[in-house]
Image (cartoon, rainbow, N blue to C red; front, side):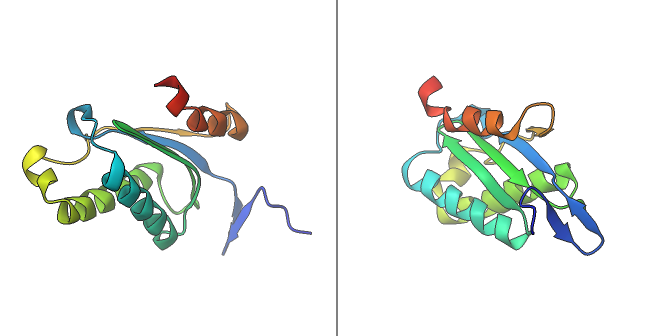
Length: 134
């Protein structure tokens, strides 16, 4: 009987989930309409590529919230860099106005926390309710 709470890779059984948040440079409210839709697609694409799983995602006009699960070989800082770097490059290529509007798409900073002190359900509810708090 499989236990869905855990993932397996060669040599380990794990459950590593992170709450990741980042913002556009200067916290500009640009993550709307076509840009929001494309960002969502790119995040899921990148997650698949790096064998991560997005459990919850909310894109607000000025920040991104994600609950993502990754294996132990991916350090949290590298996980954040993978999502931010890939999406910045792709979006700036596809939406050329971003190049002249912002010196870089994303702020250099981000927030990341492992899920454990707060339940997964609480983090999912928090992410899902982002739109009602704006």
